Length: 210
Image 1 (cartoon, rainbow, N blue to C red):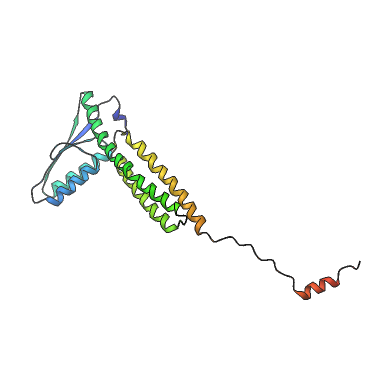
Image 2: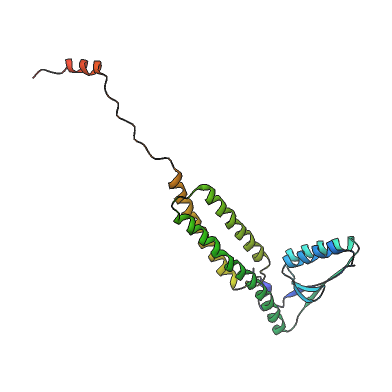
């Protein structure tokens, strides 16, 4: 998910600071989950950075508004890092976090692939088994989409994870085809109808004599 801001022009960032009281435990969990889902990099407790992107700005503002509405303190500052080295280091930190998430997808995906192979090897594939595997694959796709949404700087592991999910999708398609062949009713040919005796006799009466 690279953008023109990833090039030579300085990337602008959102510096987010949230302060809550001890009695706001549920709100604290909500804030943590939301910032984590956005892929924030923490500089210290309750202070983090996110790239300034329109979709990110919108969600951060909504979060800050909720914190303030519920009695907490939230500050969102727009900052720029003038040094290219500092910019690159921060991007690499984001990419390292995303690559770690992509690696978890790659670590767990072979189990689904092995399950599909095992079911096919049994030689009696069913649609119920196919549907179960489809649900598992859809969870991987959803998981991958969530990681991609916070992959602001095109982490290298993303392409490998997408290719791996696509490979399992192909395996599942073959599994579904096997289930179709296993459960489809056999093709039967219609039986030849015999000519009634009376009709056969009548037909014989009209045969030319030799």
